[in-house]
Image: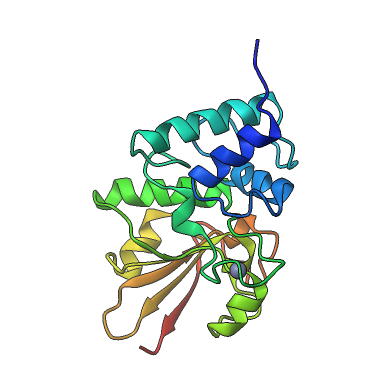
Length: 201
Ligand SMILES: [Zn+2]
């Protein structure tokens, strides 16, 4: 029979895998865990650490202890934490969409090398501080800035992401997003026909 973690146990495990608001905003922390989970069936994002979430969290924690990624085969929650560090009180810390992580895995598999995530989730205040667009997909947990590896034509041909930004100087894609599943797709980008733009730098 599936067991359910106590709140203390769940908080300790969430903190161990780097979800650092587990004590101050337990339900939000659990939701962030549930939302990004890619190492088993999708979890309902209800903020309740029931039997399924308890089993998933126990698995994630066990992987952490073995030095393995905690969220998916190759990615960990900590890579997507909002870089405000929690200084804004309403920051949810990490709320990456499961679908976006799955696409990053597909991208990683295609390029055959690790993907360095430069920026993942951004709370509204942090997004403003770093000059992000008001409808930035980072705010919805649907975007990642990445180290540029593929040029835009090759990234588009992968058919994974619904939004991509590339550097004008190099042509390398340094932002990918899944705006088609973020609930805030103002440009209509989709897999196969992504919204594409260039950065001046
Ligand atoms: Zn933040």
